[in-house]
Image 1: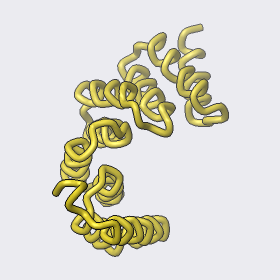
Image 2 (image 1 turned 180 degrees about the horizontal axis):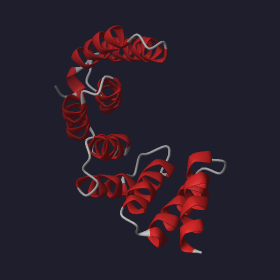
Image 3 (image 1 turned 180 degrees about the vertical axis):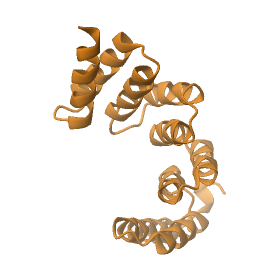
Length: 165
């Protein structure tokens, strides 16, 4: 579906459905969230709706479906960083600490992303797990630089600094 074929009311309806889905997600009403995100996508597909639908699937440990939604999000809008980071996170949750790295790095290259702290943090976790403490410390530090007060990154940084001393 092309943007010029979508009426403004359809975009508005999709946005409203997305917000309802997000509220259901926050309330941990995942089945309702899934239904609403799917309705939003059917009305007007956005990278955000696909990404958030994937996020809900991940809460249910449906990682393959979550990854499929993120790939669809990238197809819709390759500039959004969230689905790249999320794919990396889902792969990491599945135990793939090597395949996830390229996705975190792609998230860092995305021009449209609200928090580059997350892919840096995730790279820190991966490198720490691989005992590559200098790289882990660098990414934890970059995560903190992006988002001061990111407690998990600060804890990770302190942990790997302790291993380096």
